Length: 88
Image (tube, rainbow, N blue to C red):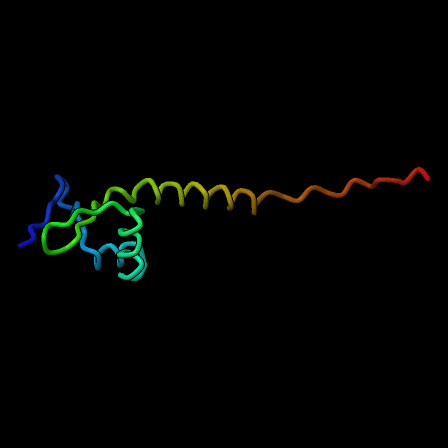
């Protein structure tokens, strides 16, 4: 029987494949494939895979960072063209 692990704030520390799929907005099949490819770390408790939720924090921080960079680039004004005269 699986006993959920909780952190001090009362949030779930470990997720099932289904919960992870919902958390990441991916299919369960994709999560299983990522586990097999060792791109998501998981442990098997004898009945199901358990995935440590905190491993995705870095990923989400990087996404936010890249979103801000893209937003800054998109909001940067386009410089006016320099009128280059041909000397021929």
